[in-house]
Length: 252
Ligand code: NAD
Image 1 (cartoon, rainbow, N blue to C red):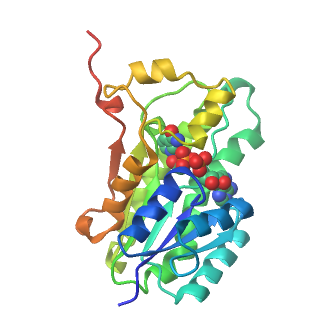
Image 2 (cartoon, protein in one colour):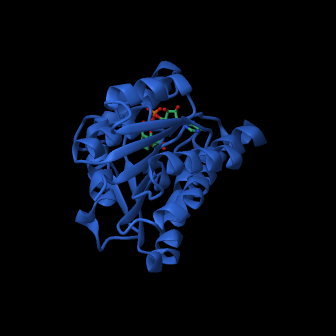
């Protein structure tokens, strides 16, 4: 049996790259799809080169770009895709009252519409697998109202709804669909928010019972569980990996 193939959007950085590393370590092959061509090239090299990884530059906010990249990946790897992990994303805070249409739709188009586009483009190739699984990336923002993050909160709540709908629609096709919702992760996205003055880590750590950020590898471990046969009867679920943030009731 050939090595299982995982298609990973946003795979050139952070959680996506950590998952690619884990998937390859466990005996799989990774296909990275990311906006930044140079980052894709260096991530493929870092992962061990063409025997275990391929990469395509593509923009998940454009259907034609996604369809072309997914087709090229399938053509160059043998046709079947065993796992899709949707990590492509940006953080671009904006206060709701003064935000523009393009700020709103630009973010929703990557996180929510992009997740749908990639899953739809991969669907015919997932059908070729006998063990297909999709893992979408949600966030603690799906369940918490965060000022300045309305588009992100709405998009991630949408990702959880989409996850349930696809899980039911594609269960008969033997494609499982789940989501992972991280708390704050030690990645470029979080560092960018801190550097821009849009996030202070001190209140985040106070609000996290485990009092620390997650490492990308701790999130990718949960993604790996949901992408692998270890979770063969789990579909339509969102697994929160947040150091206790969303269950914290310690306000007395
Ligand atoms: P990251 O910034 O390290 O990686 C995101 C990757 O997505 C980058 O390589 C970037 O080039 C790529 N990307 C951005 N726009 C794209 C587009 N239009 N098309 C294709 N690729 C694109 O971020 P990360 O922390 O690894 O985040 C991964 C996912 O996890 C995101 O969906 C994010 O919302 C979610 N998440 C992150 C955190 C966190 O604290 N970092 C918390 C909760 C959820």
